[in-house]
Length: 349
Picture 1 (tube, rainbow, N blue to C red):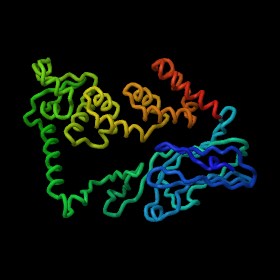
Picture 2: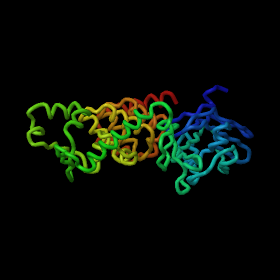
Picture 3: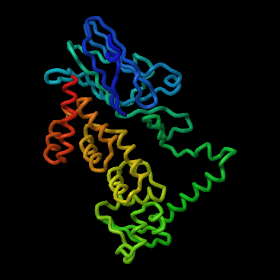
Picture 4: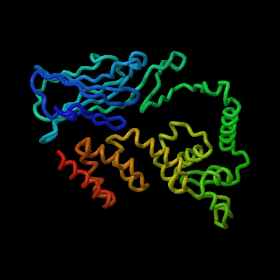
């Protein structure tokens, strides 16, 4: 049997295992695939029923920091009308061994089928001192976002103490300048409100702003910048990023608006941060919007990931109504690219 029979295809939060044929009384275990910090396995066993298991690979990491997972798992018949069976959503299930999640399917399955797992949330229980009100930390792609605020241990090490403390103090002071309107000298008008800022800070972070203030443009003369395509909340998040004190939740909430602002005002590090973040949680609800933004802002990796999610992982079938609406309004070249990918996938099937 070819190695591809055991390979699981993944995106940041989605895993699919395509099984060409599973004979009666057959057991099969997938190759390991990485989601979050852990390597995972899917197993199937067919006797009178089909048993599907999902579990992390046994390791010291799993023993010490078992994942607490929320996910949706389906079995999809990959021929004909793509009929599927969906397990009720699993929420906050601790997974340590191959017996912690077992799905017994009574419906007989023959021929080709797909096991599809979409991870909604992955957590670990951090050390006792790092838990706030019993809430564990959220983790994806190896990045732990603890709910509590923890000072970096490196800050208190023997090396680099003064420099890191100085940087932290400077950033806090910049944030205070914005928050408390200390000596602001420019007004930014958003679509539904205004906020004060500092020319020097804006000019240092954006060549577009620097050009505005260096030439006799209306922004320099009137001491105002009109950003009518952003709400005041998104504009506040934009300025908070520029000043170095944006909150993670604000960043996530306004990613698309921040992406547009980063492109418009040529702030490359913000554009890259938005790009990386948008890659991490592509799903059926946002994939078409992200595909259009990837095309608009020339983000090839995001475009490729959205195409892969839609075509290779077959999610285009799950959002037929939304996709039909997309066909009516999307850029013609982008639509042609999607159908090109579909044709390639059909030829390879």
